[in-house]
Image (cartoon, rainbow, N blue to C red; front, side):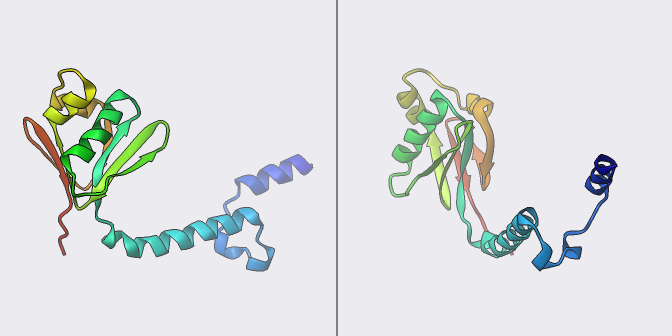
Length: 140
C-alpha cells in the first residue's frame, strides 16, 4: 500500500507555489533558487556582449584559442573548458583568420572545416573565405 501511495504522489502534478515555504524541502528550495537566479540574470543579459565559438574539445579547439589570442591582440580572450566542449569568447568582436589557425595547427586548414567542431557560437557570425568574424550588434 505504501508503494502505491508513493507512486501516486510521485506521478501527480503539484505546483511548486502550492507548497508553503516553511514546509518546503531542499529540492523545492533549489527550484525556487534557480527561478530567482534566472530572473535576476535575465535583466543582465542585455549587458552581455560576449561573442565567440563553442567548440568540441580537441586539437582544433586549442588552435582556435591561440589563434583568437593572436588575431585579437587588443582583447582579453576568455576560455571556459567544460571537458566535452570549450567556450572561447571575447567582448563585442572576435576575428579568427585561416592563416593563424594553420600556423597553430601546423598543417593546412580550410575555414569550412571549422564548422565540423563548432557546436555553437555566441553573437552573430560573418564567414569569409579566409576568416570568420563573431560580433554583437545591439538592436532595440
